[in-house]
Image (cartoon, rainbow, N blue to C red; front, side, top):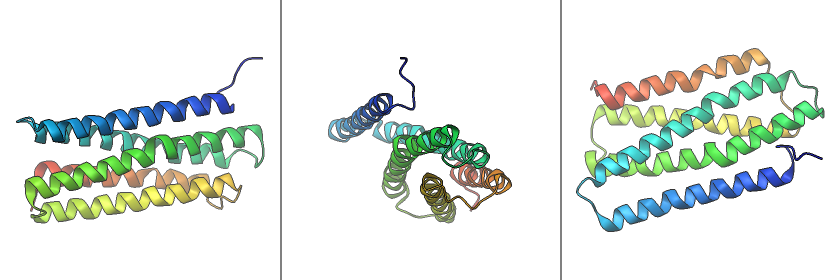
Length: 179
């Protein structure tokens, strides 16, 4: 019999690979901080951008899963597959990417800007709102896991736009620094 991706072994292997990737990422950060290269700021900025891109990819994909999951009958094989996909996306990509984005972003805000600037305060507000969307999606993963989703596919289509709008505002604040 062929092993399916919804089986426990592939999930355990994916989890192990994710932990290894996070450990390597953190080891790279430690090496950079100990080594203190002249361009440490650029390394931290690059790693921050990578983490943010991973976080955004997950935030944009999760509501799509919810949209399709709302059409699956509770308890069906399809519903159980969506539950596994949502849980893995949340635990393996979304949560670690958010935590790394916050850690590196706060380090940059402190070390480079001293938490000064109206644009930085606005950006941080939008990142807090993006984190609230993340928390909302996390709660939805738990509701779907219990077969207790009360939201329609239309609601999830609208929620799919929230990360995009916040991302646009965050990028404008970080790049244009309008105030």
